[in-house]
Image (cartoon, rainbow, N blue to C red; front, side):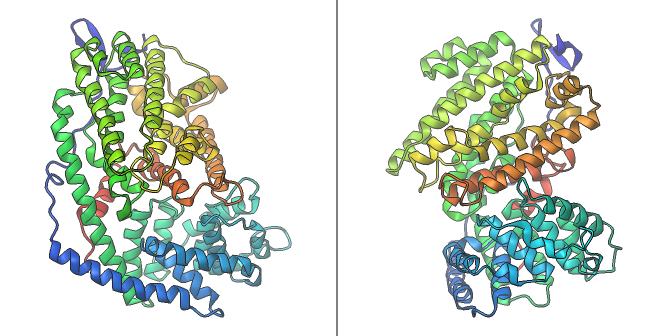
Length: 554
C-alpha cells in the first residue's frame, strides 16, 4: 500500500496519514470587529461626492482626447474603484470600439493599452494591430527597447492572448526578455517598481483587490496623479476593508463555534485564508453576503478534503460518501464519531443557505450546489481509493476526476448563491461545465499539482498529476512540470476567448467574472510553485495583511 511509504500514525491498528499542517497564524486578529458609524457615514458621504466628480470626468472627456479616456479607465480599474462607474466605462468603451481608433495609433504604449482594455471588456479586437511594430524580418523592432513604458504595456496586453494570437506569444517573450534585463536604478523609480511588480504578477492574472493596493501606492508616487482620484481610491479601499473585517469577524466566530480545529486535529485551520479567497472572487460591497456564504462553503470543503486526503480509511470514507449522496440527517448514526460533526455541519450549512435565500425572495440555487458537493465527495473517494490501493491511473483518467476535486466545479456555482442578480439560467449554465469553467478548473488543477508535487510525494502520495504524466510519457519531473504549465497556458487562452462577447452564451459579465477571478486566485496563491493555502506564509500572508489587516495611510 502506498500509504505505508509516507508518514503515518497508528490508531487502534489503523494506518492513517499524518497531515502535519501548520496552525493558523492569525490568532484572534479577526475575532472582534466594530465599525465607527460616525466616521463611516462621513466617509460614505465624501465617497459619494467624489463619485459624482469622477463620473463627470468619464462622460465629459472631449472626443479629441481619446488617450485621456483610455488612461482614465485604466486608472480607475487599477485603483479598484471602477465598480462605481461600470455603466459609464462600458458606454465609453463601446463608443470608442465602434470608432476603430486603434488602427490610427502608432504608439506602442497606446496601442497595447487600448487592445488590452478592449479584450478585457469582451470586445473582439484583432492582435494584427501589433504587426506595425515588427521590422522587415518579422521581428519586433529594436527601437522599441528604449520605450520601457511601451514594452510594459505590451507585456500586460500579451496576457489577454487567445489561441491564434501568435504575435502576442512573440510579444510576451520579447517584452519579458528585455524587461528582465533592465539595469537597476536606470529608470524612474515608479516605473521600475511597476516593471518589477508586473514581472512578478501580471495585471490580468492578478486579483483586483491586491492589484489595487499596489497601484494606489504607485499612483501616489506619480507626479501627475489626480488628487481626487487618489483620495477616492484610498477612502474606498479603507471603507471596504472595514466591511471585509466585519464579515471575517462573523466567520471566525462561526468557525470557532464549529470547533473543528480542536475536534479534528488533522484539518487545516484556514478560515482567514478561505475568506481571502472570496475577496479575490468579489471584493465589492454589494457581494457581502455572497462572500460570507462562499467562505463557509470553502471552509467546509476544506475539512472534507482533509478527511479524505489525510485521515479517513476506505471503509469510513465509503460510508461518508454514501451518506452525503443520500443527504439525510437521519443517516448520521452510520458514521464514525469523528465524522458526525462534519456531516451535521454540512447539512446545517445548506439549511442555513436555504433559509437566508428564501427570506430574500430570489432564485434559490442551493440544490445545484448540493449536487456539486455530492459530485466532489464521490471524486474524493475515487482519489482516496487510488491512494490507499497504490493505483496510478492514466493521466486522462486522473485529470477527469481531479478537475472535480480541484473544487472549482463546486465553488463556481457556490459563488452565485449570495448574489442578488443571479438566475436559474446562470446556475444551469454553471452546472453544464461551460468551456470557461473547464479552462479555470484545468488551470487550478495543474498549477496546484505542480506546486504541491514535492510535499505530496513526501507524504507517499503517488496519484498526482505530475506522477501520472511522468509515468505515462516517460518524462522527468522538470519535463512533466513544463508540459503541465503549457497545458495551463493554453487553458488561459481558452478562458480569455470565452470572455469575448461574441463567443459566450450571452452570460452577463458579472457571472463570467466569478470564474475569471477564481482563476486569478490560482496565479496568486500558487506563485513560484508554492502552496499558499496549506502554507500561507509562502505567498498569501503579506497579501492578506494588505487586504484585511492594514488600512492605507490617508
